[in-house]
Length: 334
Image 1 (spheres, rainbow, N blue to C red):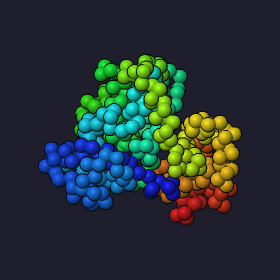
Image 2: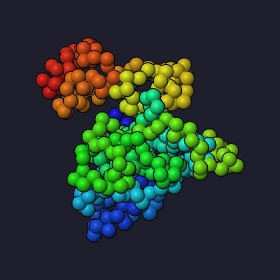
Image 3: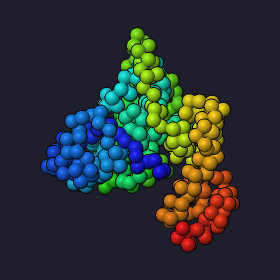
Image 4: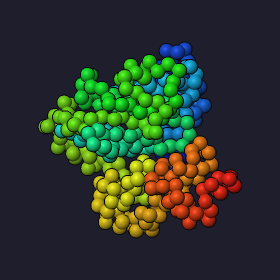
């Protein structure tokens, strides 16, 4: 997405990086400067930093320390409080599901480029963690999934285990650390990054909640609007990036994800001079071109990724937008 390069994250995302690097005999300061970050950025947790630069710092640190599980190890130095004000907003929600919903809704206060969505499939719920920023982000994704796993354990108790933890990254040289941190049910080379849990888990009472503090948390929720400075169009594009492959990219479903009615969404987009279908087409076109140029996926796989019912439906749509079939576009190099 075009706005992805302007996404930011709190410097708290770097918490523990310097200490972990030192444990491997590596000085983090040159790595941070190489990534375009201040060497002392970690000292100011609420400072906003470019997400792409922070993600690059994680990658450089992993390489310098010789650890392809660097992000996972860094996540062990984090806790609920690392989310800053979001932890206060979520802590006193009555159920595990409500706490996760608060974190998901207000995540832009901490990290603009990280989105968490949930989808229910029968008795299980898939909690997807997606890093929307471009550039290297394997370590950042490991951190995102591991942090969500850690928060779930804090909300449910140390004995809890996920049904499955899915990571799109290749299998590491030594997966032992992943199983130690994320439990025994870890799958690599998955189609998405996230955690599969039993649906009943989300209905469990939140043991951290204090009923007397909920009114104050609710007041903070009203004041800390995560959408401030972000247009409705931008928010829709963020959701579309996550829902394309689900085949549920309807205006009604996206509106529900944003906490508004379909009519309200339509009016807000009209006020910005655009329409939902125009944004959906633009997102599909961008993702389609990227994957066709990359050549790693077949036409059928790309069609499925974009939520089309068949490769033929994708080809018809693509020809209407680009004047040629996906196969012809790929053959001509775009």
